[in-house]
Image (cartoon, rainbow, N blue to C red; front, side, top):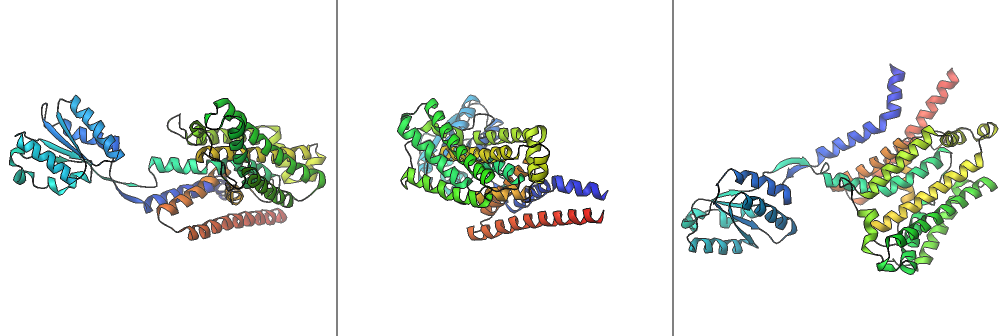
Length: 447
């Protein structure tokens, strides 16, 4: 029983932690919700559908705001189809009073007043029978409020996924690198370099704001491939000259950042077409952001690679014992080159996605991202000693960090405190990994 429990905690412990974090922030953000827009219109239309009956008159009061306008349009369509006569007033309470005065002067009875939580509470509607006797006794209808966590709102959950997409995608390559007992500190700079390269290629060679989809695609692929070459160069320096990965990727971090600033001349590049945001902001399937769908697809492919293919077994073997892997016929140098090249390619893809999200390329993008990416990998259970880690764990680790940040934002935790909390989370994950390996070694020695 004990080994089974230990295995469950080892395999699914971070999922349990993530679920507990979601439950905690859901409880902390439980507040009263007021429907707006289409949801509010459907609810009010349902309440008014039963009365006053065909031919009745309803006054809809709204403010000059986008949600209120959508609410009024949807409600007017529904009530008109039900045979009701509709009067819409947009503005302030004085505008509502003028509308009531006109209806009273025309001796037109009013059956109901529809509004949202704000407009339905205007004092001008408080005592209509006394102020406008000819209007009768109209009832005031507004959407019913309910209690629901802000954290669990669909738009907030999609926002979490969209914000973590770039980090999670780059973390795929970082997971492979760390499994081989390496590290890649250059990914944040390569992200910035890719964003600048893609933006500059589009501006200078693809037509800038009039760029075609083909031109944008070619420019983005060129930026991604160049970052892949930089990652491959790092892998070559590590394998051919036996330079520690920390030193090589630290140097390439500075090189990548410097090149990004030189190519952008220290400025952001904004001359991009509106359609360029399709990858970063678009949502064509089930309203799920395209960047999130791409992230899920890449994780599925990476899972298959690491768990079902020979190359994945080679990556684990190199990280577990490099010399034993070499003696077993594993092409160690090619495996290392592959992992660093993939890390560079995915950093380049992350840069293109970020440029698409922000519709610009800037050398400041990706600042400190390498730390968040490494944190996602480590929190997800990948061992810094190499030879151990799973793609699902990395995805869970990325979402754990995103949930912590989002939850602290929703609960108004200041940014300085957030850094302290995230630092402690990373330290705790590494400490647990160290203790787990120490216990494994002690258990092996005892056997």
